Image (cartoon, rainbow, N blue to C red; front, side, top):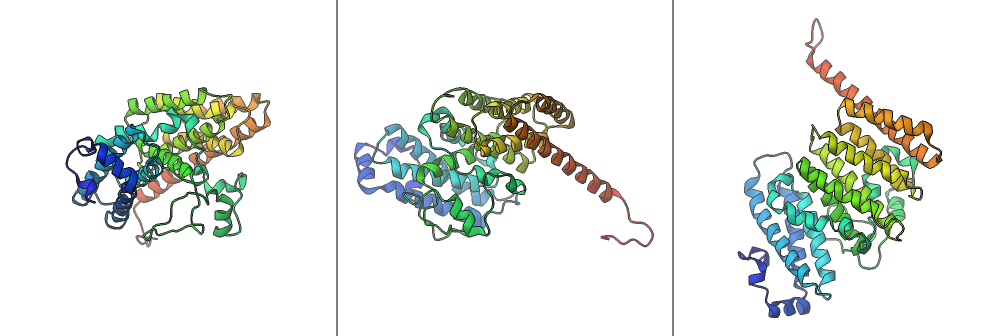
Length: 360
C-alpha cells in the first residue's frame, strides 16, 4: 500500500527514472494486488446497509483516488510495455469502486472514472465487444435465447467460456471462482468493467449529466454503421445503458426527467430498427424499454405503450415485430409488479379486527 499512500500527485514522484523502473519491475502488478485487497476489505467489513461507515471508507477512498491518479499519469505516457499491466490495474480499480456501497461517497472522482468508462463509446473502434450482456438480461426470460440455460452451472460456464489466453488469475479471497482459470480475456474484462462502472456513474449523475451521457451513446450509435466494429459497439451500448437503468432501480431513483426517458427510449428503438442486429441485442433493447417503464410514471408508460403498439401494427419485419412484442410483455410485467406493490401497501394499512391476529 506504500505507493498508494504517497501524499502528492504522481507527476512529482514519477520522473523518467521511475518510469524505467515500472517497465523493468512491473510495479503496476503490485498496485493491482493492493487494490484487490481493498476490494476484499470493503466486501468483508463495509456493510452496504449501514449509513455510518465513513470511518472505514475514508482510507479506502483515499487509496483509490491515488490509484486513479496513477492510472491517468501512466495512460498519458502511452508506454506500450506497461499497457498489459495497466489494463489489469484499471480493471481492479473499477471493480473496487463498484464494491463501494454508495457512489455518492466519491463524487470528486466521478469525472476521472467517467473518462475511463466512456472509452468504449468515445473510441468504439479500438475496444472489444463486451461479454457480460448475458448477466444483465432477465433470467426469467432465458428461454427466449440466444443463451439457452444448460443442465447445470458447469455447462453454463462452458458455453460462456471465451478466454484461455491472457485472462486474470483468480485471487485467493474470491468467494466464487470460475471452473476455468481464465474465463475472459483481458480485453473483454476491461470493457466489461468499464461498462458496468459506467452504469453506476450514469445512475449517480444529475439530469444534465445523464443527458450528456445519453447524447454520447446516441452519437456512438450513429457513427460507423458500415464498419466491422459497429456490432460490437451496439452490444457495448446495450450493456452500458442496461447497467445504468438497473443501477437506477437499485438506488430507487424516482422522478426521472421526461427528456431522459425519451432519449433512452429513442436509443433502444433505434437499435431495434437496425436490420442486422443479433438476438441478444434485440432482447436487451426490449428489456431496456421495460426497465424504462419501471422508472417512468404511468403517463410515460401509457404513451410509450401506445407508440409501441402503433409500431407493432405497422411492422413488416418479423424480427422487429417480435422485439416490440417482448418489450410490451416487459411493460405488462412492470404493471403487474406495481399492482402487487399497491395491493401489499393496502393490506399493510389495514388493522386486524375480530379474531385475526397480527401477522396472519
